[in-house]
Length: 320
Picture 1 (cartoon, rainbow, N blue to C red):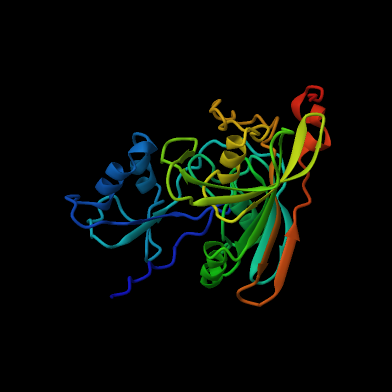
Picture 2 (tube, rainbow, N blue to C red):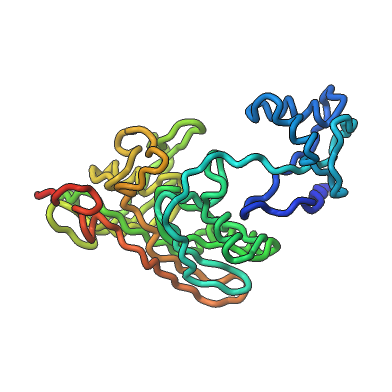
């Protein structure tokens, strides 16, 4: 099997921790120039945007030079450029570094901050911030946490080692422990292991359970309860999208602050940092595949609905 030739290195530096966009010109098109292709490809950029990028010399070829507007189209070649970043509301909480060595960075991510650039979240992501703050342009994420979930995330420093750390998660050689605050149900028998089949369709906000062979497994334990609230310890054996949120909602104890489960109540408005989802990636344990060191990390964050329900909700504690 013929190995694919890797793309050339980017001729543009990162901007605020965000990589430039790389475009490989595909075969089979009828475009006469690179500009014509990008105008068609970047339809969401707005009228005149691509032309302005060419006029300003912002479309760069592999040789590091600006691509002229009349440059002929050659399939298989690459161009790079920086997109104008979307308007983002700053997330006013820091990303804490729990551990750092020459191979990895373990960060304690706050609620509301995406792990990696995606969609409307670009500069306001843990990855972009850490690249900029730590001066590590090659930093990449070995896995992801939902934007609304806080807690521990593992990043890799060296691109050539990223696969080894990603394989830890693929092969289930990482022990992850989460904490959640949700309603307390004295009739719910715990501890228990929840298994189900979860599917997440592109463009649909919420995942759902369907009949079939289970692909999601979570150990659920009760760590404490008071005044109608439960503090739950969650140990997932798998990593399906929204798995913990789906499983607790299915048990009848949806996580406090969840805008999707058990019912979709709409997206959290940008800039609304009240009532964060009460889900925290509390612990991360694994044997380093590069150094052989056994690591065990703990988040320093606390779930505010448990420490002070009134501060989290603006209301007095429920009773029950």
